[in-house]
Image (tube, rainbow, N blue to C red):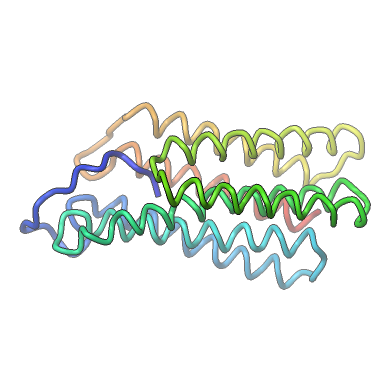
Length: 219
């Protein structure tokens, strides 16, 4: 679900997954894992904490599936759909963190206060979606994602220090893994022709997703 550049190649004799088959496959794997985890979390209870974390996972699944589609079609005649797909990807990724932020409020605060802050998150998400729809450059997604995720990290760290919450600890670890994955993605490292920085990023994110999942179950 990562945006390398906007250069759209010409249709050529690439396979069904285009010139980046591993990127497509790892994106699809991440989407499937996120959808499964969201369903499992939703099955634990219908408390606001679990509902919002489940929503976060479903949005991750949408964003990564859209990202997989981009990598599959951007060198084909379907390239005209790429701008729309980037908007969907960017909005889904950003709002997934916003949903996690709402769940964090319900974890930390009394329900009455969390209910109020939930509307703040909804307002921020709406403004963010409008921003990305107008300017879908991925750096805009990164700015929103990083700020919101840093806030969740701080909140979960505080929860673990003050209450010893094992779920908060696991989610804090997951966020650190996600930041490490982002650093790898930005490095541009390439281990093989069809195993580049995006693919490594997705696999590390898969590990982070596991920690998010285990942590959310314990909140």
